[in-house]
Length: 565
Image (cartoon, rainbow, N blue to C red; front, side, top):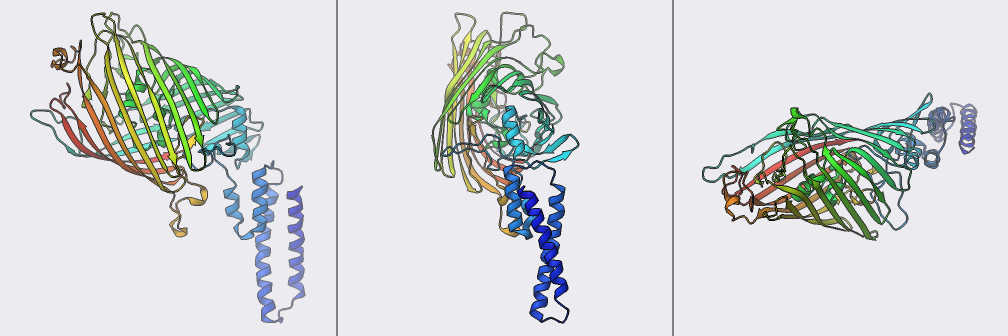
């Protein structure tokens, strides 16, 4: 009714202006002529508004669209801009008063298929500017292209996570007769090229995400996720299929939200025990505004039994000789005891275990750990254990902590890793690692808490703050700092740990200790694009790797261009 009343008022105004143009003759005073010209200019603007309103008379109105149209009538000269700003691409669930959240702050879309309840999906699409084509609706809820049926029961969403990395090692100091290794002065890598697909029928969702950048080197195509989900229970997602079960705070974050270009070494090491990308999983997650919990039973990684992938560096590589697949489990719980305008506190704990390590037909099940110096464009590992024989099962556990004060966010995690042996005479091996990171948002919306993931989001860029130098708008910029350690030594002075053969880690392991210092800048001109750059200094003690027999230090610089939808 309000829309039709506004239209009638505009018709009347148009008729009145036409009458005014007849009453005033050409010989009127100069001041009257100037007034006439101004009225005629406004009449032309109103006619364009009438045309736009006519085209939208038959569309269903929401609170947001009505508000935008009223504002447009009050500011006629800015009608086109107002219509553009009518689009709301934040998350569907709105936080209650006093509980701050990343939703609606202009943060990047996820690098995964967005799996949410049908109710939340409908809430997001109602606040989205949609176009009706026949019996279908087309829009961009959550910043992602979506086609759905008129009643919203059927829907298809398509997204993008594009990460192109380039850089190299400024210094890399081999000692003695060490081999230089794969440490380029300059190289590039398509780090991620994911295209998330979400297929929905009410509360049933299928998520399929191929990854055309699925490797530490260009040219490998893989699968990031392929799973079925049920979202009919309140704030709960139940999942079965290839999935990335969330473990550790860093792993719960979308890669589009990372402070630095890569995860800390210890979180990457822990998640790959029985979680990581494209891991078969059965389980569920539940979230509230103040707490988050999830648990999954897990199996093998995608492609892990494919002999054609033998020797591949992604998902551990494939092997046709595996006759007994791995089984394991993941558990994570997080709380948010403080959430105010200036303060946000996150506390949590994560645990992961491989109950049974994969086998190849013998009783000697093996494992290994190794990490790059948090620089992942095809480079080698310097801190690595080599093959560890006679493994019964593996576990890891540790706490999470994060604190935000206004524009400053500080967070960290610690994890202990234990390897139990299948022979009673062999000792349990123990490794550990930790990290601390800080980020300060110079301008733009600071990092906020995403309670749907139980993790921190990226800085946000509202539509009114998108990069536009002509109007002194610059998006969002943050400066970050990071300190990370992994210790892969245990009883490192045992003769078996010092052996030149990596197959003899019976009683001790000399995997080396790796320390990484990083600093960086992340610029988001808008919520969909980013440019990031990191400088790293690493220190690694000696290990069994041919590139690190005497210890090594070095420096690297890496940059990323990022596009997300």
